[in-house]
Length: 125
Image (cartoon, rainbow, N blue to C red; front, side):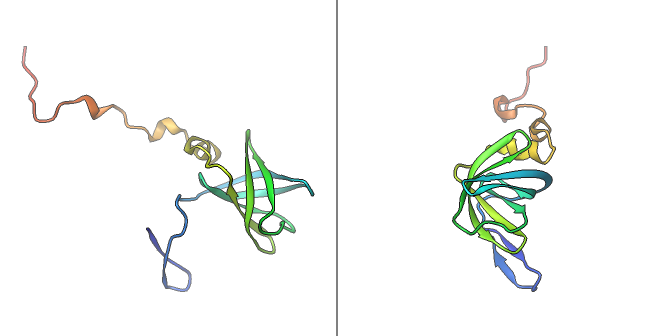
């Protein structure tokens, strides 16, 4: 479990299993009560935060659509101008990277070191 220091100066435990990445993109929240547009401000494999006028109540289910992606979700919490979304199934990390505009290839190592035997010297020919 990780810890962070809040605005109040107190050390808090991090409740999320995954780290959220900051993003700024338009998103649609589709629900049986109607569709709403908002601004996606952070995202992780497990959920997202959406700035939206008059957010739905906690527990409401819907479909979040952003860029070329979509995921079923439920409202975890709601405030005056924002809501937290919990995805029903975790989204792939590659979707998070694409959403924030980072290429997954950039985060991979340049070479696969798993096949290099340790402790053995190369023979000189």
